[in-house]
Length: 235
Image 1 (cartoon, one colour):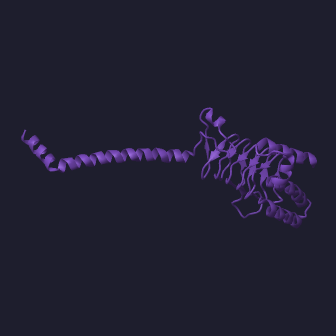
Image 2: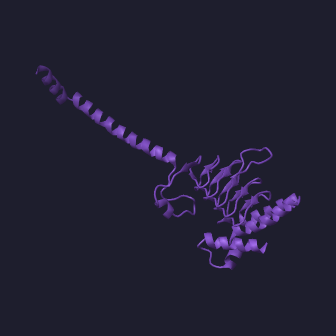
Image 3: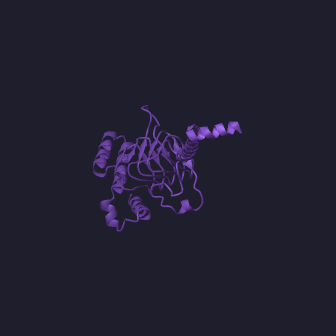
């Protein structure tokens, strides 16, 4: 038990440069508190003390702003940064070394029994406000961009962004240098946004051509234009 707590404290220092002392982590990190309470409530859940487990998770939600169902399975060295608004459903599974930011939802899209929440592989980073909905797998090392809505499986190592989330590719070394705390690199963009921008550019070009055609038609209909046409016909 104490070795798990030490691991959790170390991973806070590894992933949050604002952490300064162990005492600060123990007293001021709601994500850390939520995970410790979940370990107890999950143990109660597995023992069949389900009401007591739910009650403890409810108390944890009240004090931390993080709602973790006691049935959820969470691996080692998981870090929940900021914490407020995080919701983790009953059949969700989170692999080791994952990072979740505030406002993340690991939810379901069905009211049926059985597996209905996502499974995160090792080292997954889920950006602030992202929603991962459904009983599929997000592969090891994947990144989910802030405010994305993921409704299908994500390959290992992929980065997905947008609504619904789509896989994007990093271009060059710029992405490696970008700040990835919210799972979006500087050189990444939603593919749909790229298409919309391209369409916007083509529309602007067509508008310019149409204006030129109208200008020439107006010039031909003017008295000067009529005279030029008559002179041309006589010639």
